[in-house]
Image 1 (spheres, rainbow, N blue to C red):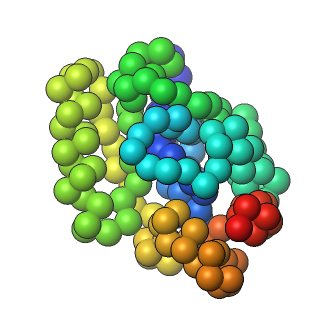
Image 2: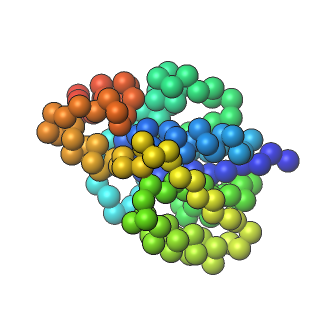
Length: 163
């Protein structure tokens, strides 16, 4: 039986912080499903389909990461429901800073209440990537700042065309 992890998020856009967590997840799991949320209270710069394309281009084209162990999908259900669908017992979450922990801890607890067979695994991105957030990347882009340290070439091209 394959060890499958679900890495859910909005990825609007995908950053080097996300990619760092994905790379680390690939070392721990047989299959990593990057699940792009279609729901949530956030307003998105990119559509779900655009975010999926950006993730695939960033991972496979820009970073040259093999697609053999990665699936990129969209979802609009509870993450625990998605885990059941793909027979995953693990939700992968990235942590950047202490400020993330309170929200992520609460989310993990709620997911545990929804399905006690599913564990949440937290991975820290490398120190260089811990300050990166999609929200700040969009703000830097809107002010014509240099994005090279935060997102891949594919994402830079698309974010500049959007703004």
